[in-house]
Length: 417
Image 1: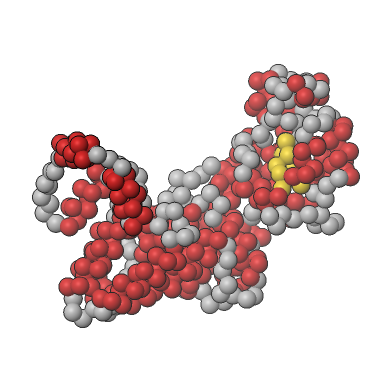
Image 2: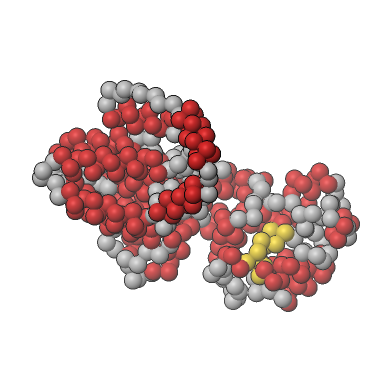
């Protein structure tokens, strides 16, 4: 605010009085004040949401803050200073880490056991839900506002650690746990509702690891198959948290849930063979797990510790028909450009390579690539391409896609959890 004041003061000092008068007149004549009367604070919130077309996520969080501060100010039994202090502590944790800060509050309320959310808490519903808590639900659960915020503050740190894959609660399996925490969130941030519940309430590291393996199977199979209608919705994970409370064996419930919501092996195989795979962390993770679980079983290879330093190599270059430097590939592929467009991003045409090797490999015809795959990379899946194929075209892409699909069905199989 001080910087803004100094900026405008400097600009104003440069203007003549006549120019300042003109600016003042223009400002006054361009401002309109509209008074809209609302029957309640909830109505005011709804109106604010409908008029706020700037796409700012802070609107709902600010309104929740104002409602909490107002409650603290009006209720003499609440320590107002303490409430404000805890609120700022919460924001100091999530503000540097989350661009959509409202998500933490929504996921927090859906994850806690008491007071339990009976439906999903969306950005639009956030103010209503907090208002409902302050209007009586907290009191019904014999919980003070300060206790709620203290719990929220503690879990905000856990939430950020989940988001970053840096959970340190369990010394046993720390690396494995965080790897699974990251993989369950690939293309699925809404699962953090359930992850927050599991990490904060499970006491045994083995139970946590089992739960994460189950959720990874559910997430990876659904993402490969393109089945996002349920698991990409907050309501699904809110319901999962609610049902988890009622189970004697919570992981058995998660197992049943995953089996019910995951595609069959037949569906997964068909989608794996026929879908396109983009050049992103999800595809890298799938290929990395194939490398570790299948190709490295009998010999030492290379796992991916930092996906930013590994490239997805297209065995037949994506620009085989459009770039002059790849003209030699037309002889190898023996197909039309339209046919190649359909198959070039299939999983069978992909492998992992070190970024340094990828730059040299992508410019060479297939025979030369095979020499690089055999001698200049530690990735066994690339080596297998050189060992198993003498030529490369659509037929080979399909054959290898089917092979990798069978491997994926084996890796992400509930029976192996």
